[in-house]
Length: 146
Picture (cartoon, rainbow, N blue to C red):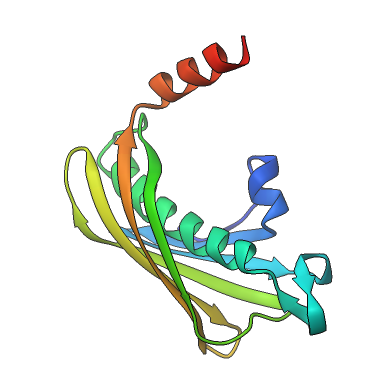
């Protein structure tokens, strides 16, 4: 699946999602556009954006695999997220790739990395992810807002 998209929500728009390059077989590749508004000193992208990009790629790997199986009622919820930074991300296009390392019915272990346009690895991540029902999450959110 490769598509240029309008981000489906404000969170992905804030992250600068440009397109989903691939999302199948428990793997994903997403393109983001890092802007100067995401940077701190010297044009270095703030680590929260880098973490968000890798986290989004891991989540999309899980969502894509479940959609392939006909399960559209799954939301990946991060229980733990670890990011290691190797080189600074700079303004311009970056690519986050995620994959499922080990998957179960309620918990998955995923990994991912962030690449610059030349293919250099800028950061790597791993996550323990709880799989939950969209309906259950939405009900809990509505209750919290009430």
